[in-house]
Image (tube, rainbow, N blue to C red; front, side, top):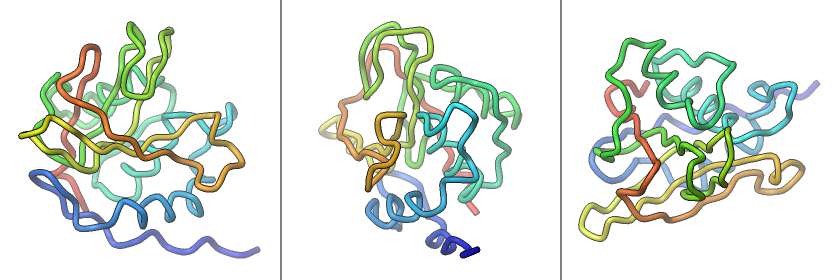
Length: 163
């Protein structure tokens, strides 16, 4: 059995950019995500689980939806709760599901992903996220730009916990 290639070097966050290309991160996820897929298949929580496990010193626990991902990571690691303020990258984002925003739809599960770049002057953030619609696709994740702050979106800054 072929072993997947190792992930690219860890990002060095802080401020508004990472020291790894978004394309390289997306390619690494394409080949390395399988160990992080649940019984429900590829879901939005898969990318944050893969990112936190491979690029941070934090613990990621299973059993939550996109709307609680950032809060669950904060809670299990003794971090302050997520806020509506995007302070730096990388950050986990979670949408509540109350409104369709940041790639999520209205519904009880919300959505989640990782903020990889931000521009405080323009209020634009570049995120990478996935979901069941990306199953079997190449790439199996999406890169989008969204404006912030945004209603029903919270952020958990991971910059102090990168490996």
